[in-house]
Image 1 (spheres, one colour):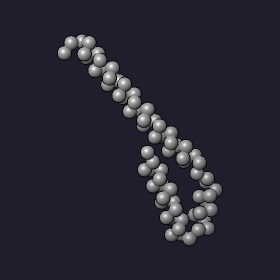
Image 2 (cartoon, rainbow, N blue to C red):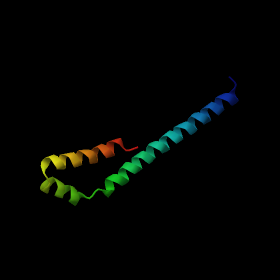
Image 3 (tube, helix red, strand yellow):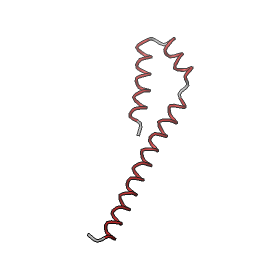
Image 4 (cartoon, rainbow, N blue to C red):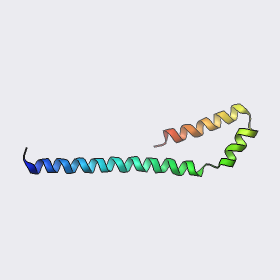
Length: 70
């Protein structure tokens, strides 16, 4: 391989890594935005006043949504 080809491959690799990082950053930002919208007073109300099985089901879905968010 000549030097031009090596430089082109390095530039392509850098661009790919940049795109991959930006995708990851977007996912992190979406999760953070979602988490920031969660009303902690509502969570407190759910844990204190709902039936335990309903509260666990709701909170489990909430956590699952955060974890699986794309």
